[in-house]
Length: 224
Image 1 (cartoon, rainbow, N blue to C red):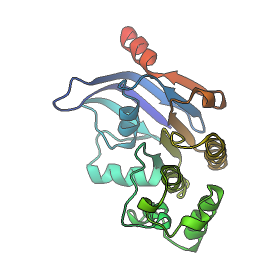
Image 2 (cartoon, rainbow, N blue to C red):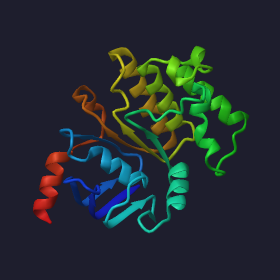
Image 3 (cartoon, one colour):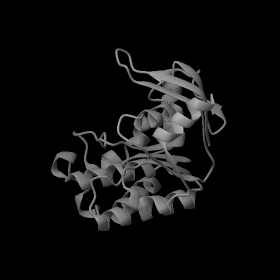
Image 4 (cartoon, rainbow, N blue to C red):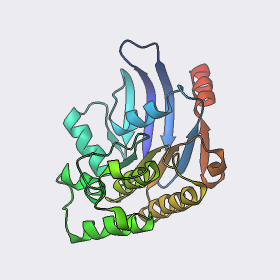
């Protein structure tokens, strides 16, 4: 599903450097990425999603190379293939919770916003305990509720890849377990892959593989 080769990335005007000689995620695999802040975990997700572009190297998503695509082509590929749960939620303040969940249908022509899509959004919201709050805007929701809206938005188009940046970080233990159950069940039903950045080590036994990104980068750079 994902293959990175000889990636080099830096932010303009920053000392931050990310070097990833190789990184792979198989179809249907569920992988957790852990490591100290500042090691590049969020940057890794942004590179895979085509939000950030490396200065060197190659990124393959579901057999298609992303690094040579235009901004628009990367955006279309991201909308078609990827559901992204952002650490800061990235909800639109002027839209209701329901319209935020359905937003992926509005930014691409790849799938129609029809009754089936609306029913799927409502079903996801119900599973996340949001049924009575779909008419509210993000400012009227708690952080945990906003996070659950962001999760529903990532899942609503049944993408082949879920990228989750601290998807359970603002949730209490009960909701954390329920949301992880939903995330795992939906990816399993769709045969989708999951790459999740997390600081919650209690969740790690549920993943197929765990990558400590600080050690991974050090080992990979040492072997390069």
